[in-house]
Image (cartoon, rainbow, N blue to C red; front, side, top):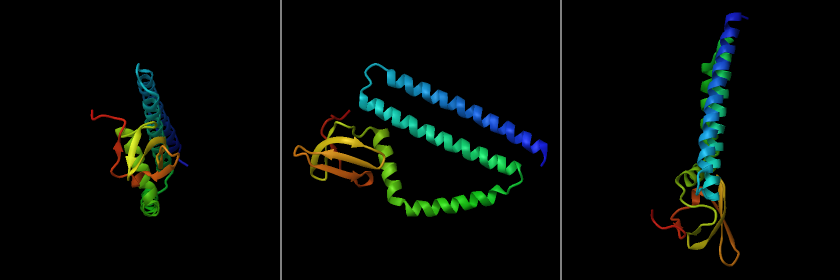
Length: 167
């Protein structure tokens, strides 16, 4: 094994780690300040926390993939075939988990666009009630009779938020 390649891999690893730590701490600081801002409601704080965790997770995976691929390339492994295989696998998994991906994307959009929050009164498909929980996959709405409607996020269409006025 070539010592130059090993040293190059270690230097690259340290650079990626340093960039990851700087970006991660910056994200943490920005979101902490936003949550401590005067007048931030618990629903908004929950939304900010969810977005922060999502960005942290994406950042972590991107850094890990970059490090692994670069180290493998420096060790003489042909990473282009690995990338091609990962691309094919991602396409197959995308088709297999299509509905789940739709749910997650819709859930992210609900959170980012702040269309509704826990505690809001909404009407979905002639079912009016209070949003009792939201996740990236499902939303639960409870009506005045105590009935709970559990909806996959990608099935929420024609939502009316009765708790908010147009901004």
